[in-house]
Structure formats: C-alpha cells, structure tokens
Image (cartoon, rainbow, N blue to C red; front, side):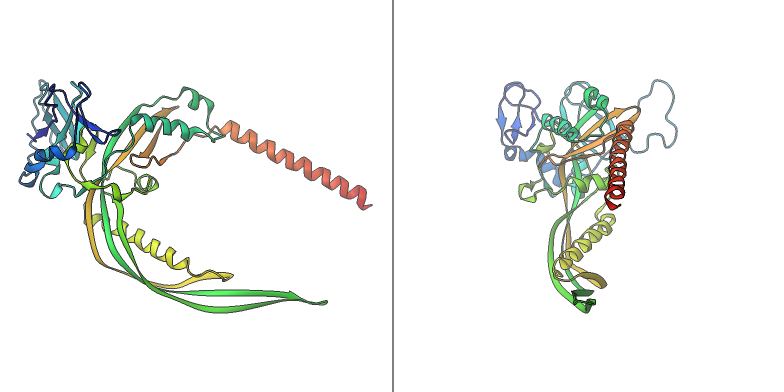
Length: 363
C-alpha cells in the first residue's frame, strides 16, 4: 500500500493546505498559518523511499478479470479510513469521503521527485472569473451558453513538465531582394537586386517547457505559457496539499524531440528578425546544433475547467501563476450566418448603387 501524507494542524488537528493568498500552509478551521519551509521534515523520506504501489482489491461480487485493474491504484485515507482510487500517475488529491487533502508520497520518491515547483498564485474563484471574462467580446457565442452555463468541474492541478536548458548554435542562409521603382513620361521601371544573406550565432535557452503528461493536450499547455521561473522553488510535497497532482508518464527522453523542435523554431525566428530592410527574404539553408543540454523536472500550476453544452464537452485551462486563459467556445451558427448575409447584403446594395451612379453620371 502506497504511503499517504496528510498535513495536520498541530493546534486543532484539522487538515491544512497551501493557501494562495498568503502563500503559506493554512488551517481552514483555526486560521493558523505555517511556513512551507517548516514542513520540510515531511519530505525527508523521499530521499530513501522506493515506490510501493501494491494494488489491493476486495470485491464482494465478481472477480476482476486480467488487465481490468491495470493502471489503477487504491490508497487508504489516514483520517477516515476511506479508500481512494486513482490511476498510476495520481500524486495528490482529496479524500472523497472526508475531503482531507492527501499527498501520495511514493509517487514522488527517488527518481520521481521533482526538482522544482511553482506554487499556485491564483485560486479557484479567479479561475471562475477568468472563464466568464473569456466569454466577453465573442459576438457568435450562443446566448444560452453564456446565460445558463454551469461549470461541470474545476480543479487545480500540478502538471508535470520537463524544463530543458541548452545552447543553440545556428548558421542560416537566406535569399533576399530589394526592389526600386521609378518612372518617366513614357515608362515605369522596376529594378530588383538579389542578395545572399548569412547569419551565424549562439542563443542560450533556459527552462523550455514540455509537459510530461500524456493526458494533457500539448497545444493547450503551450498556449497558457509563459510560466515565470523566477517564482520556482525547491520541491516540497506541502505545496501539493489541497490540489491535484500527477507524476509524469512521458519521460525526458520522449520529450526531447518536442523540446528540440521548439528551440530550433525559436532560433530560426530570432535569426530571421535580423534580416529587415529587404523586400523579400526566403530561407535557403539552415544548420542548427544544440549542446550543453540538460533537463529538470518541475510541477507547474494549472486550473482546468470543464463544461457541457448540447452534449459537447468544452475544456478550458488557466495558468495558475499568471492567469492566462485559453479554451474553445461554441459558435451560434444562426447568428453567424445572419450577420454574414446582412453584411454581404449591404455590400451588394452598395455595389448596385455605385453601378447606377456610374451609369447616370457616365452618360
């Protein structure tokens, strides 16, 4: 059975969790606050603990068939004795019976221990407010969705990320042109000059993030960037209390390709920004090499919101540090097409009037 850590208030015995407002551990019952650093002793076992995720299934009826329990884990809450069921990557959660926040210590033991964590800066109410702000300025958003919308689920989750540091060396060639035009009383002249451009240099990249969870949409996680790494602190499990957390299921080696792609694209963009002053610039050849590379493992704060409209599920995400919010919204097709035909009708009438005026005054 995997070891569970619960943080108890020494004053009243209530469950304490990380509070985004004061950036400390806080008891919701007696309002006592604790510095996270003072709870560091709880994490000492992570240095020597090995993961022991033994599954225990007690079923009064049918027996689980082979493969049905694969990837499932059972934990016992120390406060009420209730069983907590999760998948193999669950790292922190709340007991569904007593509501106490728990951290599954074995999920962060040994090589699974993160190097860094960025604590949540924004709470659940900020995420709700951001969702309704997201609705504003969307002319084709169905009124029913906006007025009657309810949030099916909202959860703060520490998402596993790999942060890559590397030096990038690039040499890129471009084909460029400059165009000069002039005219006299008879002709208009165009002169085109052709250039071969060459750019070479080095760029240092630090903390390029790639999410290490196969369950998180990569595009959505990239859309809520950036995370400000100046706020990152050494990992302690106390920061996870009161939130959900996953351990990675996509390791650093499997994430290197995505990191390299992002770094190379950024290198090419940086070099291209130095080629101003030409009419056209077309890349002709690119050679980018990376060296002095290393990766760190971090947990970064994300609010996820789910809602349903006409049987369709919509997922939204908010950066729990900066508040950047993303997510697709439904479109009222009736309003869209009515606006479309209204505008095209106006243009058609205007064109007809212009045509009549030209005929009248042209004659």
